[in-house]
Length: 87
Image (cartoon, rainbow, N blue to C red; front, side):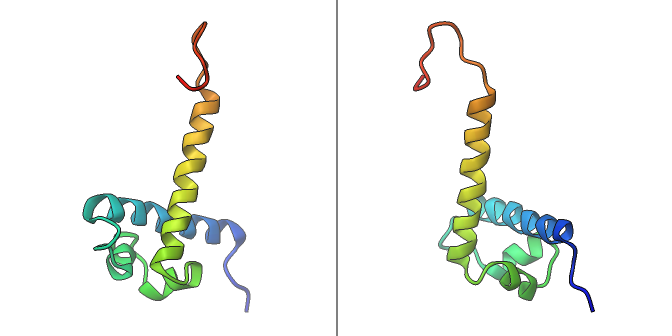
């Protein structure tokens, strides 16, 4: 029996991270639960644990995605004349 395709695995992981970010933003990191994140992603809680062993690991994954998207956005946003990278 074959497992899911790499594309399906990446899509599921992305859906989990998106649901986690929404949950963390809505209820805070401390109050967020893996159960509610799973429900938000329309997945079984066990599926979350196949991708992330703990809420802390999921938080790190969510932060990684958020920082990556922010960095890409900053790189793709042209600076105005005389504007420093810091600005």
